[in-house]
Image (cartoon, rainbow, N blue to C red; front, side):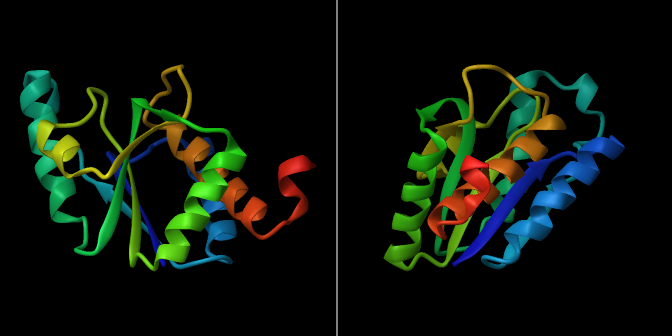
Length: 157
C-alpha cells in the first residue's frame, strides 16, 4: 500500500517544514509515501469561499489516483483514538487497497465534489488547527499509527 498525503498550499514556516520532514522520513520506513502540495489558487483572497473551495477541489481531484481509498481530514469526521486509527489503517492494509489518500484542505474546507468523492471523513480533534500546523500533527499521528501497528515503543514512550 502507498500512503499519499495531499496538502493545500505550501508552508513558509521553518518549524513546520522541519517537524513534518521528521515524520515524513520516519513514515517512509514503513511504506511508500507521496506528499502532494496543491499550489495556492491565484487571487485566492479575492474569491468567495465557495469558489475557492471549488477551485482547490478541482486541483485535488486531479491528483487522486484510481484505486484509492480517500480520507478527508475534516472537523465533522469520525473521532478515533490513536490506537483506533492504527487498527483502521491495518484493516485497510489487509484489504489490499493500492493507495490510502489523506487530504488536508484549505482554510474554508472542502468542495462538495470532494465530499462526494471521499470514502471517509476523519477528525483529528474537535479543535481547529491552521493548515500549516496540521501538517506536523498529521505526520506525527500517522507515524504513531505505524509504530502501534508494528508494536514499537513510541506510542507509550
